[in-house]
Length: 369
Picture: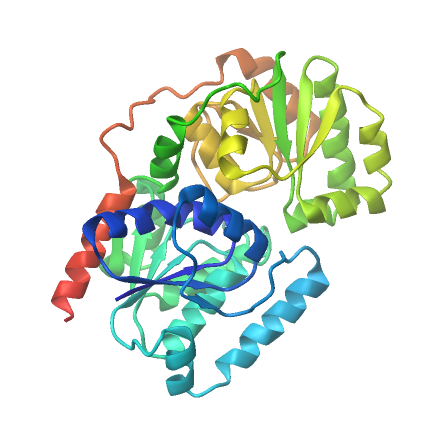
C-alpha cells in the first residue's frame, strides 16, 4: 500500500499526476489529508476528477489563513502524535502498517506526515528532496523542515541534477534517486489540452500572486511589491490573485484601498487551478513569491519576476526568471531584459517524472513484500 499525504494546494497539484498514474496501473493507494488547506484541496479533487481522501486528520472545511490558525492546527497535529502507534496506525493508516508513505515538499504538512509515518514505523519517500536555500531562516520554516525531512526519509526523489548534487554533499546519495524533472510537468501537460484563452483579458496583462510569510509580515517588502505592481500597471493590466492572508495583510498595512483605486489593477480571488493556469499561460509575465508558480512559469515558458531574497528552486534562473532580491535594480533589470526572457530548451516531451517515481515505488513494494 502507498499512503499519500496531502495538506496544501501545491502538494495536491504535484501529487495529482502520481495518483492518476497509480489509478492507471490499478495500484492500491490510501489518500490522507492533513486539513491545512482543506477548502482548496476539496476544489482541486473535483477539478482533477479524483476520489475524496480516505482519511482526514482534521475535519474542518476551511483553510489556514492566519498564524493563530496555524498554531492551533499544529497543536492538534502534535496531540495526535501522542497516541500509541497502534491507535495512529488504525486511525490514520486504516490499520495498514506495511507499504510506504509518500510525502511532498517543505510545509508543516510535510513535517507532520513524516512524523506520523515514522511513529508507526512506516518507510517514507520524499518528493522534491534536495532543494536548498542554504539559509536556515529564509525561508522559514521551510528550510528547517527540508533538512529534517531529508534526514529521516528512507527514499529521496530529487527533481534535478542540482538537487541531486545537494543530496550527495549531504551524504544522502545512497537513498536518493534523480528523476530529472518535477511532477508539475505532468500536471501542466494534462491541463494544456483544456486551455481555451476565452477567459483572458483582451489586452496585455501580468499575473501577480504574493503569499509567503516572509513577504507578508515585512511592511518594507510589501510596500516595495506594491510600488512595483503600480509601475507595471502603467504599461500593462495587472491581475492580482489574492490569497486570504495576503488580503488581510494588505488591509492591515493600508495598501488594499490604494490598489483598489487603481483601475489598471484587478483584484481577483483565488481561481480554480485550471483557470489560473490558463491565465498564467497567456500573461506577458508573472510576479510571484511562490516556488510552485516559478516552476509553472518555467514549464509554460513565461517570464517570471521572483519576489524573494533567496530561492531554493533553480528552474528558470538565468533563462526566463530573475530573482528580485527586493531591490529596485533587479526590478529594472527584469523590465529591461523582458523581451529576451525565455527558456533556451523547451522540449520536455520525453520526461514523465510521475511515471519514473511510481516505477520506483512499485519496485520498492515488490522488493519489500
